[in-house]
Image 1 (tube, rainbow, N blue to C red):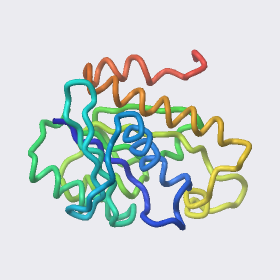
Image 2 (cartoon, rainbow, N blue to C red; image 1 turned 135 degrees about the vertical axis):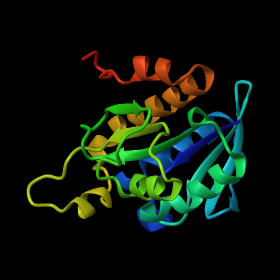
Image 3 (cartoon, rainbow, N blue to C red; image 1 turned 90 degrees about the vertical axis):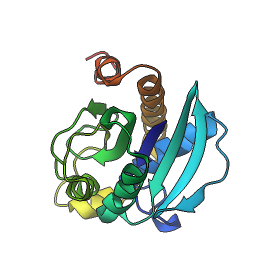
Image 4 (cartoon, rainbow, N blue to C red; image 1 turned 60 degrees about the vertical axis):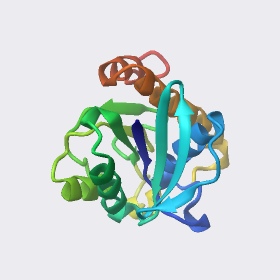
Length: 191
């Protein structure tokens, strides 16, 4: 079984914000694989899907981004997956818009949801899929940027990025981390 955690903030107020791209990838995967309505469990909304031959839980922590580790730790401690059998999906201001990057582990890179997960798990050796949201312009604060919505003109690119991220999760489920990194860490335009 695979566990796919998508990070974001709960509630309609935050729907469609840059910080919630992890939730958007889960929504796309649930749509593609006929996931039913979410059920609430262990501080998260959970949708069960079958991706190929693999039972997969799509898990959206509802504890706010900065406390995502509470839900992630609850599921990891209950299911005891191998480190390569779960992934955390989150936004990343250090990546340009439209880029996705898989990593086997490492630091939180300033992402507070990852920081809390690392703190609660006691290690950083788990796969993560980072989705680029770019840097805030001018003097805009990081908080205002991540809690802001994508402009309408950017929606087609965002939808394409979400679809590509969902494709990469499916690839990871059917293959392995090394394979997904080789195929999806490239610039989608070939660079």
